[in-house]
Length: 109
Image (cartoon, rainbow, N blue to C red):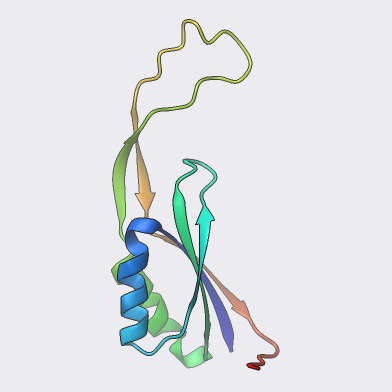
């Protein structure tokens, strides 16, 4: 048995949740926040049998797409911010970060 931890952007979370339900995967959704852009994420915790991991990874890959987004960088913390003019930069956001962990025991009470 494996525990799959998938961190996805909020824009993709409803689509992924629907796909998981449609394909009979049970998941726990947790609200989370990304560190770099401080944007909203959703973390899915999914317990799955070893043989179903490839199907689950395909579902995540198909429903969580990366995209380009313009963001304004934050001003420098230490130093003179008077001459700092933040220009928006384009960064890649979205997609999914997925961890597959071995599970020794599983209990459902």
